[in-house]
Amino acid sequence: MAPLASVQGQVTALFTKALKDAFPSIQQDALVTKGNPKYGDYQCNNAMMIFKEHGAGLGFDSPLKVAEAIRDSLPPSKLLGDISVAPQGFVTVRVSPEWLSSKVGECLLKGDISYLDLPRKRVVVDYSSPNIAKEMHVGHLRSTIIGESVRRVLEFCGHEVHGLNHVGDWGTQFGMLIEYMKEAYPNFQDQLPEVHDLQEFYKASKKRFDEDADFKTRAQLAVVDLQAGGEFARSAWQKICEVSRLSFNRIYQRLNISIEERGESFYNSMIPPLVEELKVRKICQESEGAMCIFTPNISTIPLMAVKSDGGFGYDSTDLAAIYHRLFVMRADWVIYVTDLGQEQHFHMIFDAAKQAGWHRPPLTRCDHMGFGVVQGEDKKKFKTRSGETVKLGDLLDEAVQRAALEISKRVEEQSKDGGEAFLSNPEEQMDAAQKIGIAAVRYFDMKQNRTSNYVFNWDRMLDAKGNSAVFLFYAYARIRSIQRKAGIDVHSIPSNCLQVKHPAERDLALKLLQFPDVIEAILGDLHLHHLTDYLWELCNTLTGFYMKCKVLGEEAQSCRLLLCEATRKVLLKSFQLMGFTPLDKI
Image 1: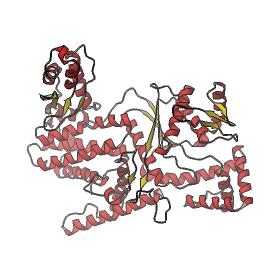
Image 2: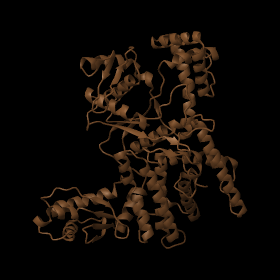
Image 3: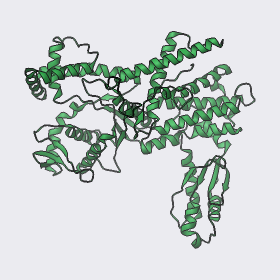
Image 4: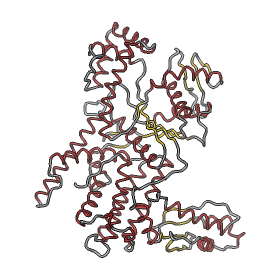
């Protein structure tokens, strides 16, 4: 199958050639946007600017004349159908139905959908990043699912992608955790304890630390032992990490997350030699007893490679991490997915990496994918009724329960209407509830502008008629229903049977071929709502197609079945990028 290519990009290339041929003395990028559907699919907006800046010298008396010169210089192309020129100077083109038919068959029906973003890059995506011995909560939701989806998009584009989980597995708090582990689970070294609630484990250890001076002393000594590589402390630390890892992995399995753990401890041994090197190179300087890296272009507050007490903190670890990713792993592109509150910190890290020569733009690219917070209806951080932070596992459980309730209502309605209930089996219902509930949470988050805060709302999240994962699942299931009723193996239909003729067929074919434009937009600004916006538009276009074009029993049945299959494949690929598993029946 031929890789997909941006339709707008191909139209832009044609107008670029036309501008160069029509006005060889003028260097101007082709300004191509989506057009008004009444007049065409894409429009070139250069004529007005050219007329204002060069019209008199070129002998043109209006933007219309400039536009006509652009139109007349367009190279022959099977892509172009009708071309019109407006008096204001807009050149509008309509993509030809023949080209649409050919490209849908060539790019969407033969084999798996593919796209290539060249040159191929080695990319590190840093996301999720919970803290050891603490429960994953709603604050980890956005980083985890946004990071996973951007990782999947980049892999789809042909890049070598490393998804890294920078867990908080090092620091002074491990002294109290180690001592508490000894007290609460004396045989922890022989049998891994079943800690069902990490949050309670952490709170209990903190309570002992705050209230018992003897415990606090032992905890402080345990930190020293851990940092010195003491056998017992290291063993206890590893057990605590293992217990936490089991808890995290239960969430990751439910969310279909693929990520490699590489926590703070991984970089610990790199910090001292790295600091020494930066000192020799005068990048790291002493200031008020600390070893600092100054980034005046970003902040007046320096990064502390070594704190005034001689210890290492977050700055130290993040410097070592970006060094390892850019210099050792030879990553071309590093993306950090964290809340917006850390934006300045990471731009300081990028600046320090640039000073050190590890980050060499434009050869390397570093991005901070910042995001806003999840809010309750009161526009404050999303909390439980008791004021506690919402555990991510509890949130997913509730999503599944609510989806199960909606499914049972639907099954009951189908039974009352005398129709066949597709999900009459309780096991099927629960499987569907798991897939729909979790997809609903993920999609609702992804459709937000990631730099904005958003209000968590169950009703909108599970609205079968609104812009939700539920709506998309129904669209997918409807296609599968049509295919079952047709009783034809769609793969046996030759792709040349796809001859786009009806306007609704054409609308759907064009919308399908705009999928790579969405991928390019995500590559440009790392905003995943481009994909959710597109899927909402695609499914509404599909609904319009159904309303105007009967699929089964018509002369155009073969063509329309192929269009349905192409839509199914684009939906399926999009679901895969978002980590969803669709349902054939709902």
